Length: 118
Length: 112
Image 1 (spheres, chains in turn blue, green):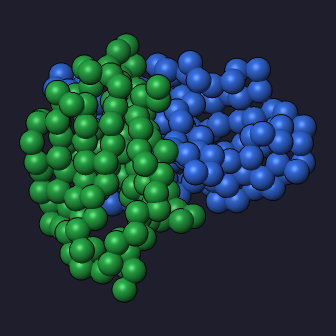
Image 2 (image 1 turned 90 degrees about the vertical axis):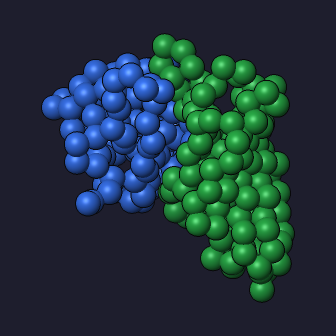
């Protein structure tokens, strides 16, 4: 079974430029997450999708960040314009959420995109 | 107070020893707990999940949960140099979104 796929793996841009990241989750996983990870820190959630619906985007800086998951499968995260402080690793994860139970399921991460803003 | 706290380390143990990694969390009603391993330059990899008080064993790994003390730990028996990585503790914070909160991780170094 293929894991979470992300592209590109690395991106270097100048500040004020736009950038986009793409994620394809594990087949059949209905929940998709975008995280940001700074060096020496744990991942921090940016946005969570249940199928096509963004159910938690409370940590997404909406003035410059946007995301979409149009058909409930792959997803794109965009930054426009990028700032120096956006340099980080952007991780996509997916899980198979089921009704009932503990209400939460194990998340599996993609390889991430390392963004450098100059 | 951070929601999930871990000692940043590094925790240095000799090969073959038991490595003990600890994590505390602030939300008393949390029910789901995870340990992820992250090698340098790689993404987090899920290695253990635990939901009930007590111990859960999987190969050389044992997760321990004490909800009364709001404490979760990971024991690695017969530590190998290949276990050298950062170990992230993650806790589900109940609420409308059941958000997964990660600690900053503990760096483990297993030396031959």
